[in-house]
Image 1: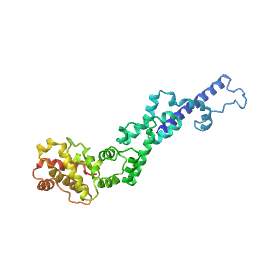
Image 2: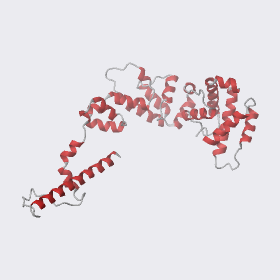
Image 3: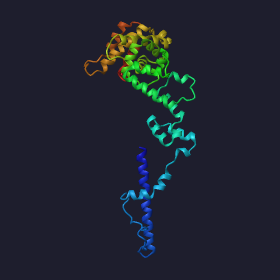
Image 4: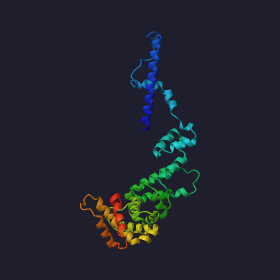
Length: 321
């Protein structure tokens, strides 16, 4: 987009230059009675042409002006130059450092890139040695993430070996929670193997004052549900149920929710989501049927509350999408 706008502005300027050149030639003809004075071949000005027919010639003539039209970031105050470069990603910033080496290699820029991509790393809270480089850290974090997406255990081992992460469940859980570049399938495999990390990851969620289906969606955005029912899915729903009740003691007291009741409601919501969203199910479950089936398993939950659950799934969609 930026290059396109620059070309438009350049062509407008070229057209203006051609118009000005044509005007000067007409004035000279008018003043000399319609004839131009003879000029040396090397100094003779070409006749006015349609704009754009000889861009190469005019661009060479305007080379000095074009160079003056670009602002050198090194001529700006350092704070302004760094602010402009802060909008670049890592690839573009590396290219910019080839032109503006001091600005492109500024530690503040690379620190911002690291923390915006990987929100938590153990190394952020340590005292850094004098030769530490956030640019090198970015490359190591990127390498660790790519390795994780191929082999989760090797990726975590690499980050621990570089001193970026501490080998502690809480630190690993924070790294996973605040990172969005990890492959969810590999993450599911890793959490299934490291239940201690999974426990810490669940405690990082805050479901206070959230409606149950929305809280379940938020939970499955960070910890993706397995594609099939099994022991791992039961473990996830169990941990979610206890965490949801711990975050909403008032709702537990007023509505009568317990971890067991939330567990039943979560399964009901998942089954309802599949029923309403699957094209293979012709006869969709009605609201009355959902209320009746759910209250058979959770009798302490009011019909109004269960009805609101149905409305949420019907209007918003799947809880595990």
